[in-house]
Amino acid sequence: MSRRSLLIIIIVAVVALIAGLIAYSLIPRASILLSIAPEEFTVTYNGSSQNVNTGKKITVTPGDVSVSISRDGFETSTKTVTIKNGENQELLLALVPKTDAARALLETEKSQQIIQRIANINMKNTTAQYVQDYPIFSVLPIKDKFYVITSCESRLYPNDKTKVAICVNLFDMEAKQSAIEDINRRGFSVDDYEIYYDDKSYDPSAQAGD
Image 1 (cartoon, helix red, strand yellow):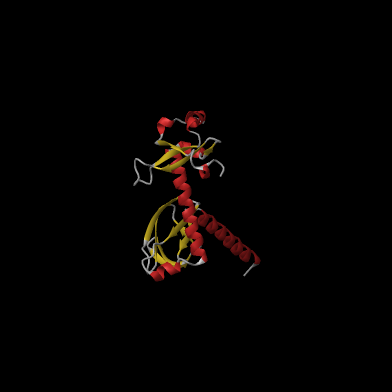
Image 2: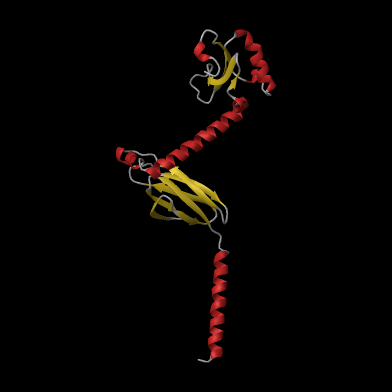
């Protein structure tokens, strides 16, 4: 084979390789990081299943992707992940155990870290929802020498955990108007809340700062 022919073959191969890489890069794709408790599980997506460990990253076609997570002894969970081309998302999930043996699998360090992350996110979302529903929550507690303003359980809806009230603990009952004015100065109105004024003047342990 002549040197010229060899050179042509090399050029064609390089061009083909470059064209292949370009074509591959143009294929729409995205990835999902599986942060799952328990650590070992079966993931089903795009019509196929595989046994994997937490921390596995799967490549998917952008759009609405149905991802099913399962393991013996646990309730199967199926989530729809909406993901864009080139995007990386995380699926954070703890399966619900159905047996004592399954519950024991959630006691590992990695599983506990995932469960704690989920709890923190849920708490943050709950707090954010409370602040949205009850804007005064963003400034509570309000402490003064003569009163403390805090959130407390609703007395109108004792069985509804989504309902809360505002309790004004008064260490001097004459300070009630001052507490109302304090609330108004902060841009809130007592008329917008279920609010209670509790006489704490007889209770030294309830004094502000104690």
